Image (tube, rainbow, N blue to C red):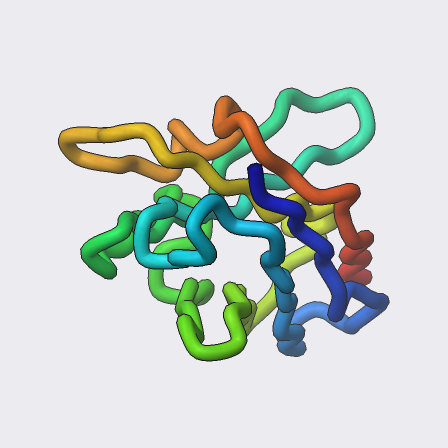
Length: 128
């Protein structure tokens, strides 16, 4: 099992930036390299959307809607997963969730992330 706690959300004007953090704990065997991570978001009245994924080999994938603006990264030493969001748009508003999985994907895509078995409680992002 893994526990995930997000932080870093907030309100920002269009064109601004935010960095979300996801602190992971209680890994099985305490090995963060055994997990895939990702971020998904959900806005009121809309379906969940996977925005970024990071497999256990460090390969990244993004939704087309955020490609070139968002960057996912991981610090295994801490361990924390980040989502750097630049040039934010109003349509990026929503609750952002960090998620993790020990599943095997070939390849892992951002759209897989909303179905990951472990997720945090989310952090709110508002872009005006």
